[in-house]
Image (cartoon, rainbow, N blue to C red; front, side, top):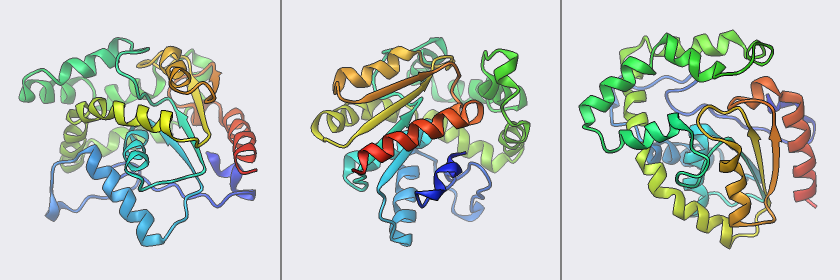
Amino acid sequence: MLRELSDDWHLVAPDLPGFGYTRLDRNTRTPFSFDGLAGTIDGFIQTLRLDVSAVYLHDYGAQAGFRLLTRGALAPRAVIIQNAEAFARIGWLEPMRGIERRTSEPHDQARARLKRELLNEAGIYREFVEDLPPELAERIDPAIVELGWRKMEDPYILDAMLDLHMDYGSNIAHYPRMQAYLRETMTPVLVLWGIRDQYLSADAARAYQHERPTIELQLFDGGHWLLETHPSEVNAAARAFLSRASR
């Protein structure tokens, strides 16, 4: 949905492995992890010899991107973060606290509960529509929701997604490194946040400014999927920020 910026920017938006329209090689099955996602995206960037001047980081892609930033594999001149946390327990709502509890549960029990409660048609639908009022929920393309849960019908994809969800504790362990990146670099950062996010309140967004007061913050009356519900507003905010950051 950021394609409106293509008049001024060369946009590259790869799907993470296992997401979108990607396919997984059934002959090279390895446990899915966020470190693995980061490595794949790093390889993608290196193979295409991309000079990445700015990044837009959201959701699971943000946690992979945070790793590339802290490793120095990415050195953009501007960073946009949307509804992706980098601070333990700040602004966490009950579903997010549930993710943390999962890290201390017996592995097989936690994996079975994930499969039962989240990685199915009803669970994926809730992930997208959250608790949004009808006038916002109807802005989310039903085809995207269907693509998400249809992928779970593939046992191979389902296992990979279970692996990834079970690895979320590695993101929590990585927060301090991302916080150090925010403190120690002067790279301009814009945080965009839908305040109706079911996992993270606006306090999770404000935490970025506690780390570095010059970080810009814009809040929207939407949920986790702002590019679906507020594309024009997000594009306008991104365009203005990138114009300032590139001066």
